[in-house]
Image (cartoon, rainbow, N blue to C red; front, side, top):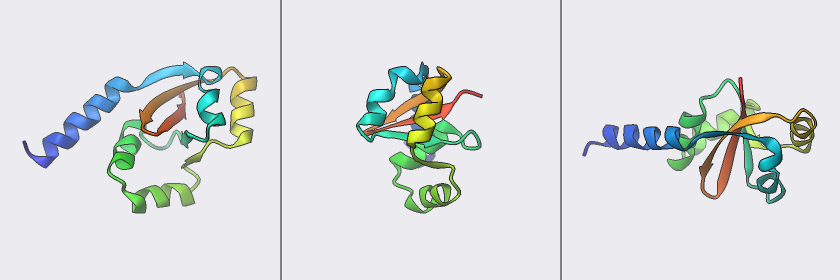
Length: 101
């Protein structure tokens, strides 16, 4: 199997594993320090793929641009107050969350 098809299969698998969930159901991951924010400008599946590939350069760029990182207390409070729905996907040990557009 070619490397490209392995990547395509992984992306398809991750896409199937994404789900919309209310923030109140994900607070335990935040409390455990495992919730990572993915901005609306990024593709959640591609972000999960880059995490799985340990692409530190790209992830670092996203972090420096404020597009990716640990969920902040302020974000968590806002999402709880507004009963926000988020897209979520697990890239163990992390849970990536992205506001529903």
